[in-house]
Image 1 (cartoon, rainbow, N blue to C red):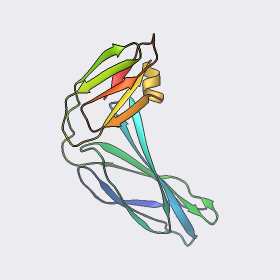
Image 2: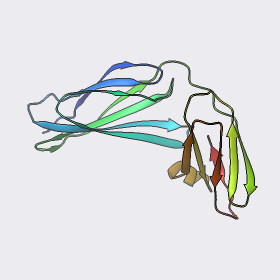
Image 3: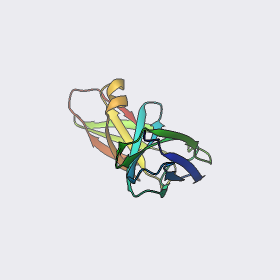
Image 4: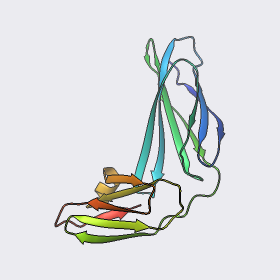
Length: 163
């Protein structure tokens, strides 16, 4: 039986998590697949996937949000097949940034100007869809470090927006 890998949180800060991966077996490991999950505004679960080559690994994931719960899952790719998943949870330190205040204004039938308030020097994600279900499962999205963006939409539809 292939055991799951051991995920050990080495350190974390306001915007990063460092962790190590190892196996407690003599089975040859060719690499790991790691998923990092977090929830955006209770509507949208985000995921970042890392494919790591080699047997032992220390990884640093940066560009994260302060005071946010993250779930890290990993499995090992071995000569005998894939291992089971292992999980670890960690909350980044610091104070979570305040939610931006969004204003959306139709420019014409196919363009909406979105603007918001918030800190500088960060990346904002703008998510939009025609229903709450679509906003949760598969919204259209765009990113920017500015405080406004014009998004193109379909005519004769109502849209929901999040930033």
